[in-house]
Image 1 (cartoon, rainbow, N blue to C red):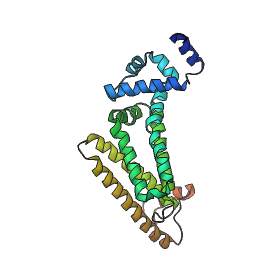
Image 2 (image 1 turned 45 degrees about the vertical axis):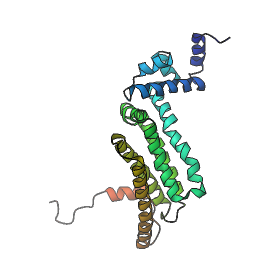
Image 3 (image 1 turned 60 degrees about the horizontal axis):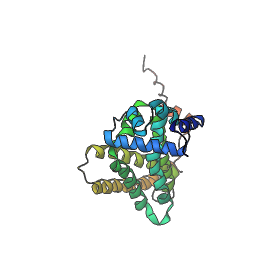
Image 4 (image 1 turned 90 degrees about the horizontal axis):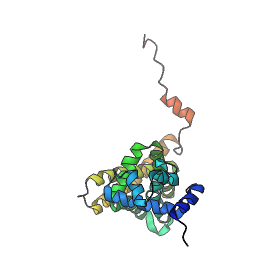
Length: 243
């Protein structure tokens, strides 16, 4: 016989609220409420949908920030999981990998625009930990894409690959935010334009990398902290200036 609800909830609470099936059900409830009520969906409404109180809802995730981060893991990190096999698929080609990155991010927006607004606009604005958590996920996508680009001869080396990887992810994210406010724009046009711009940047980056390497007589590398500090320090005034 199934244990009474109160007994089951007490057991979950005693385990720190880590029951994966229960957490999944609560996240499903949050998804339904956000789809129904939009990005302003309240924690109280999510708790009602799940048939529990807000304190019990928070107990499963630690606090409201924990719930936000769990939703981000479910929906944003899933994009990284989806792209990982595409990144490592040798037959995909550079253009295919770039297009897949663009399509996966835009699909995340198109599938549930209110959830995207909830996570990237509301939750990120309300909670610093959630904002940092989502930034780390997006940064991780840039690092993985940079690692893939590093193997492409046209890119011009691992440093430029990381720069391009993060730049491309940022470009897609910014354009995705714009597209969210302009749904009348055809998705295919957005995908084609972003993919073309990304491939052009990669190609130009490789050419620029070769020119810069030839100019300095060696490969481009990140500046050390001491070098960066020296560049930021203003030069002393010449004799007679500032008097």
